Length: 263
Ligand SMILES: NC(=O)c1ccc[n+]([C@@H]2O[C@H](COP(=O)([O-])OP(=O)(O)OC[C@H]3O[C@@H](n4cnc5c(N)ncnc54)[C@H](OP(=O)(O)O)[C@@H]3O)[C@@H](O)[C@H]2O)c1
Image 1 (cartoon, rainbow, N blue to C red):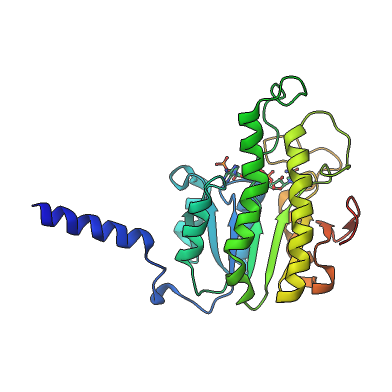
Image 2 (tube, rainbow, N blue to C red):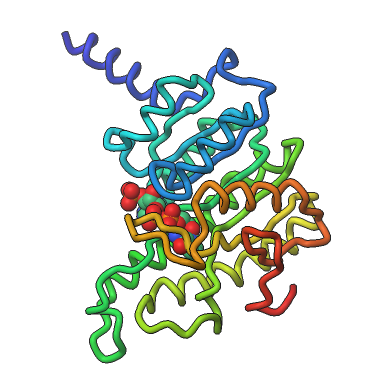
């Protein structure tokens, strides 16, 4: 009985660490999207799947990802994977699962946005909330870029992007969103550095601003961009990007954002 239990445990462990099998490997172009279960991430999945890509659609809670699972059910090229950006070992494990397989486009889309204002004001800082924002919005996408760098470098398209906001750095001075704005400013700066590194490795690195997109049930008001249009635009920016542009930031419509100095 004990031997059977050990054998079963070994089988489970082997399944957990086993890289994707050769049969699952493919010459199809591949994109990785974080935060793929809703909002802009889900639209990236939809559009890249429509373009014939294999999509590694990563999200925190696959079991709850109803819309994403619905898409994956009808398209075997959409692979739903669990990934929490706060979990560094989990990021390494997912990269390990796809070791040796090129990933053409790595899209760091997931982020924490607003959060309660309480705890984000100087004098009553909630440090646990601060850590959650900075682990998710800064450390996570930094680690994703490092862990998936070999996959991007080995691919045809060699593209790594981060979704960011004009509210980072010294951009739009709207009140609130303190940890969102400051965490995006930090990761923007880090991606400028990754862009420099990319020039050496031939990997294209950009930050992209989707515009104001109604992803939380807001009413579509003038100045907002429909999610389909925003994502279509960002894909066009990526497709046209050259190494020369590395580390720079672009709006969904291709306009360069000069919120930060050029690298
Ligand atoms: N919408 C806009 O107007 C706008 C404007 C400028 C920039 N952006 C940027 O565009 C990106 C997408 O925006 P959105 O509006 O689509 O966001 P959203 O609807 O709020 O979705 C955020 C996504 O990030 C995921 N996420 C949060 N914490 C995570 C963690 N620890 N690990 C893994 N995933 C995590 C969420 O997963 P759960 O469902 O599990 O929470 C969700 O999938 C973000 O980077 C955002 O900063 C958006």
